[in-house]
Image (cartoon, rainbow, N blue to C red; front, top):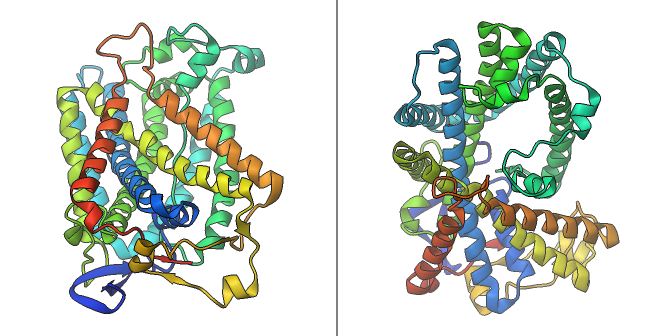
Length: 456
C-alpha cells in the first residue's frame, strides 16, 4: 500500500530502538482511529481497558473475516464443479484445499507484488462495475419474471420461527468494511464512505430487485445441489450451464479480490495492535520488512491463522462457521464501543468546535507516558468532517441500536427446533476470546500495554 515507510519505534519518548521497525502511514488506519477515538472519548481510569478490548475485538474480527471470505469463495467453486459435473461429490477437505489455494493467491499479491496493490484495486473497481452489468443484463433479459406482489409482499419463513419479524432479525446480516492507510483520512475517508454507499447501494439494491423478480421456483433454488441459490437462479434464467458458470465466475473473481483486501486489512490491524504491545509476541508481529516496507510477519501470521482455521472445516463445517462468526461479533462489538462513547460525548456537549488555535496550529502528541499519567485525555474537538446537533445525535443513536441488534441476533441459531448440529456456538467462541484477552492483560500485558500512541 502507499504511504508505508520504515522508521524506528520510540521508547519512553526519548530514544530509538535500533532493533525494531514499524510502518509510518500517510494517514491512520481505521483501527488506529477507532482506538484513538476511544482514548479521547473514555475516562482516564478505563482508557487502557477500553482500547485493549477494542483492539482485541477488531483483530479477531478481521482474522475471522479473512478465513470466512476464502471459505465462501472456495465453496462457491465447489458449487460450480457440481453444476458442471453432477457426479462430483463435494467433500469438506476439498473446500479446505481450495481455501488454502485462495489464501496463497492473497499472500502472493500482498507480498511479492504488494507495490501493485493500489493499481490492482483500480482494476477491481472496473471489474466490479462491469461485472454488475454482465450479470444483470442476461439475468433480467432471459429469466422469467415474477409479479410485483410476490416481490414486495410475499414473506417466507424457512427457519421455523413463530413470526416473520423474528425470522427477519435472525437472518439479518451486516456489511463490514474499513479504510486503511489513506492520506488526509479525516476528510477522505468520510467522502469515500459516502461515495461507496451511493455506488454500492444503487448497484446492490438494483441487483436485489432483479434477483427477486427472476427468482423462479423458490423450492428448487433452495434445494439446489450446488449449495448456492444464486447459481440455481442463473441456471433457471439462462438455461445454460456454460452461461451460468460464466456469470458465477465473475462473483468468484470478485470474491478472490476481496480476500486479497481482507488479508491486507487483517495483517495491518494485527501489526497496528502489536505495535502498541497489545498482542502476544508483539515484538515480532510489529516488525516491518525493510526492503518492501510491508508487515511481512503479520501477513504470514494472518494467512497461517486462516489455514489453521480451515482445518476445523474438515472435522465440522458447523464448528468452523461458529469460529468465523467472530467476523460479525468482533467487528461490530468494537464499533459499538466507539460509537456509544461518541454518543455519550455528544449528549453531554463535551466536544468543542474546531478553532485555529485548538485544531490546526497547536497539535499535541500524546505519548505513552501521557497515557499512563492520564495527561493524554484532553478535550475533544470536532474534525473537519462532522455532523453536529440533534441530527448527529440521531445518527449515532440509530447506529448504536443497529449494532446492538446485529450483535444480539448473531448469537441466535438459524433454525428451530435447535439441535446440537444447528446450535450457534458463536457466543462461546466470542466469550472465550474475550476471556483470554482479559487473562492475558491481567497476567502480562498490563505491565507493557500503555494504550495507543496518538496525534490529536
